[in-house]
Length: 302
Image 1 (cartoon, helix red, strand yellow):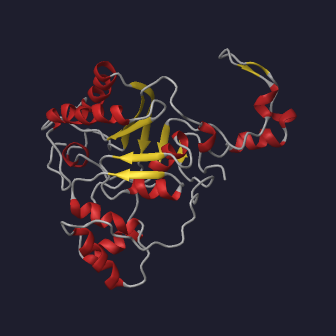
Image 2: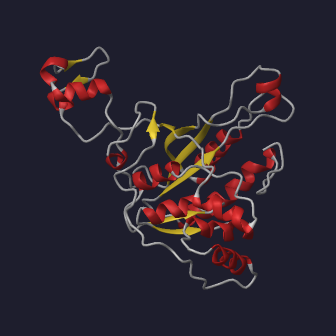
């Protein structure tokens, strides 16, 4: 937030007020049982190796001033993120690599729609042994922590409950979207996040047929995942070039010239009613096949 981004941004000190102006409208249109998931990367104060608190100020003001509830805080750990900021991490070597984003799960009520069983992760090897031979590895009793563990603990529920630390690498480099962007000679959006991030929350917080809205769509990763999961979606993006290129997340044309023609029509000022050629879709492509990781998993239940 210290440098001007290719996709546009405001100064760090102005950002909180700017973002809250959107949060007011989001709360107005959100269903009573709906959720607002906000991913915010960390930042340093300009010229100093001191962290900005802007993401926490956003959260506190949204709850205290706008009436949002913090349903839960999540943390997205991207192990493939490059070391930054260069001055403090690479050159002076006085700070660690910043590789975790805060993700605020906000809601209008204390009980928004949610079902954690839709995003279960694989059991640990120890738990798999317990399930295979519970008499050998497990005995019901009260633990020192005060938890009273019953016989039901050894039942196979299809997977473990994930933690709120999501380990999801961001390594997209040769996707269909990027290939077509190169073909038509436009740069892909520089701040793309991996599909597994919106997939986790879409599966967790919505049902098939629900509507997912992304007000800062960028390359429309969220819309592409929502469609694959059988949800309706709406995407807003202020940059016409990014919005036009986001069609490549859905495009399945056989001809390179057709892709160039599609982009030219989408980028035009009077573009409307344009149909994007798509492959035969599998509406619930990703249901039950998640591969995101959490702090306590290596593979998702499948």
